[in-house]
Image (cartoon, rainbow, N blue to C red):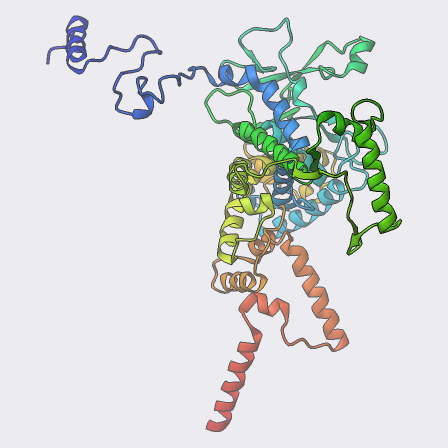
Length: 561
């Protein structure tokens, strides 16, 4: 087969160009006329002015990153709905307590299940004590428990699309361990003025494959005027490697990438900032209109000539003096007739005016405008951007039934669970791993002293030891009876486990089992008999049904005998 030469190829394309009537692409900017995809048609009357740039991920994002973050934080501070949406995210992902559920991969480690159970119980107990200690050991600032740190990180992620923190090694006493986490404001992650080379993007130094090697952290926030005025190193940057020389993570930078080769990120809320700001302005104008409608504009209309009208307002000399005198005498006569209290109807006083004078009362504001449906459409848009349902964001359940509420809650739950897995669980696991590594090397983990435990640093052993699941916020129930019955049926027919169902309620199954065992023993000691025993009910269905069946069977056997 003969190969096509460049000259022949050019001639063929020229023929196509003549027939179809469209020019060959010139570089990356040409768009075909009459394109197969209407959205790419540059001659459409509605799309002709829509010519977005074709930049790289960092080219699109880095120039607007600071402004986008500032606007996101501003609406989170000043817009009640956005603040409520971020609160829903914190409550749906983290909840009141973020619990570790250790799941070591004992098969990979070639260890038995008994060791795994002992390891789980020990590590979970020690980590929870450290994480939720009122001394806030894991927080470098010593102001937040582990749960508080996760809620803070969730809020930061909602406003900026990323989270930055450093793993510190603090030696102050009396710390039970030295690992601590310091959250860093993302405004401080910037490229130094004298380091504008291509391998630094948004303050992150990259290698040839785009992997982060280190971070340039400004010593002070650009608007920390107290530090800036004192001079010193406030204008300097500190370079922090992503990892220590032996591999321990030193900088934690989490983000969800939407494009390849994306160094930084912006929050999902940025896509809805325009609508959020318009909605905020709409509410302000609607409130102003409501205030105006609650006020009255009053004017006095008179048939008298201007001079006489002015006289009624106090002018006692000039052309209107005679009329003013007459009016004064008239009103004095009226006052004498009606007495000091005046004429009233249901305690409402009726005023008296000068003859030929009328009092006009008008609403200062005029009704109208787009109405509530327009605001609801804007709130739905904001809810979609925040990943929550309209009902949860607006707290409007007036037109919601069980099915629609269940569907809305389910959609929010799926969104929050994906965020939990991709962001919150990952951050929590990194912190947990850093803590575990220190405790293990300090000889504080008894289960690691077992002679058959393989080396932590070999292969994927560190991942196997530190495999963990996280129990966050409870899912919430609309109809407790129906949803509890569904959970019992799933367990009964092997479609779920106690661990999974209790995790949805924000509980640790081991602690529940231990408590059930204690309660069962205490009831037995006190001679208390319950019609429905919770442990039996959760394990095998309704005991009442079983008792009825067993009673029927005993009766049948007795009759047969």
